[in-house]
Length: 156
Image (cartoon, rainbow, N blue to C red; front, side, top):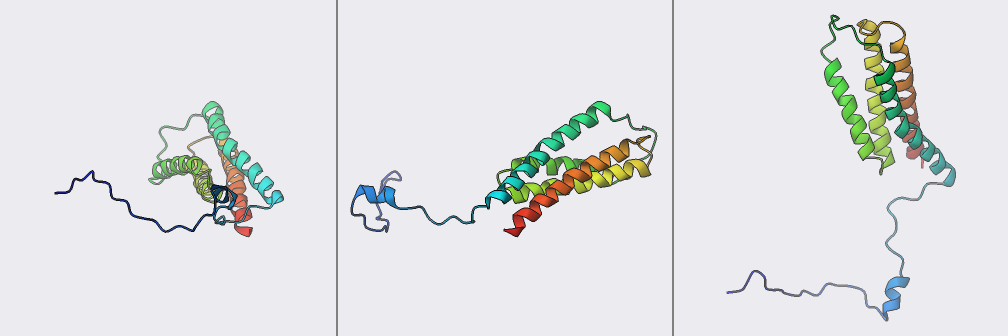
């Protein structure tokens, strides 16, 4: 009876090597994607900074200066799920920063939801005053920066 821990060696096919220095001299496999041109990577880097720091700055601003909502005003049924979806898009966007196209796409989705939520603040009179304009303008700017990042990355 053979043991489960018994080690069997199976030869793996590999190219012949003349010396150990050949191993280090060879280049790795071709990269899957071509590197970004320098000017494009600078633009993408700037947009990543704007979007990456813009969302936390907006959330901090909203927490500090947003007027309290009118508690007695009814809200549309889609507002709470959209708010949670926006926060989920933001969290996933930060997790996807290593792959900028996915990250920018998620941030653009969060921006689109944020614009809709800002407009709903005005329609439902949830926030009185001009806060809905500030909220909508900032979120629209962040969404536009995210869309610009997607477009720049799609051009290459």
